[in-house]
Image (cartoon, rainbow, N blue to C red):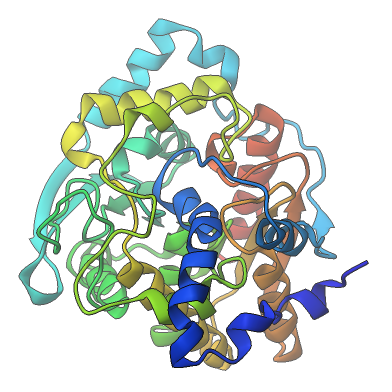
Length: 392
């Protein structure tokens, strides 16, 4: 049996010593198999072809962490459940609530327009800033924002550059692209200082998901005093091997979709076989939100986006010592989108440095913990709110 620590750094033999003659052959041989990695990041569902490399990826992603499992919890925070979402009156309340949030734009790094929504309490000293995942937009978080607001939090969320209703950098507006990963963090700092900080909240918390986790962890390393505590849902702290090694070969000077990816494709929006969530109603609500707001849709990732992300993972791991903010991390048992072994490696490194952190495995859950089945969603959000409450 292959051990996690053995496969973490392994590469096909032909990729360890690539010469000019066999470089093209290696690329052609690997590209189709690598699509699985990139398509899961660029579409709601990815089809995958069996191969030796795919077997390698499956073994890598199935290596279990030794995180403690989240305990089953009563719904003490009165979070939305699936039965509520079957009630049209209830869902209309969520829609009306979201529609009444304050929206606007500000200029991010290099004058890219950044869209935001704010849901401010009148008499609360607690606020949450949400950093979302790749392809996502504020419209995907309606249910979560509604639940957080009903638990006494003001909520701040912005669409990251290049996606949602924010400005795009590539000529092809459907392409997932970023010039520098640091620009995500720069935008978030501008949002924090321009909108959240002036309100003088006593307690400020960070909530992140997937790519937003890489952004959020970098933010904590650069600005360790901005938040009382932070939570990370399925954070993108690494991609399944050997994606980062191979993308160095495939990344070029001009923006280009990863092979097999392209513009937003509605054909991928089927619940059956998806690798995101086991809750069909929440999956369909996510798809409907983007269909109602087509400008927020985003297609496949570019090689450049993957390359910049891979560079950022090294930066994140190299600067763990700078984190001062207490944080909690949730890793889905059936994760297929990001490398969950990276969660284990990160927590182990943080604990060796005596960082104030916790980590949990969410059993029988896929990547999208905030739109998962009721039990998994309630477990995750309840544990997160408990953690926040410890740092008032």
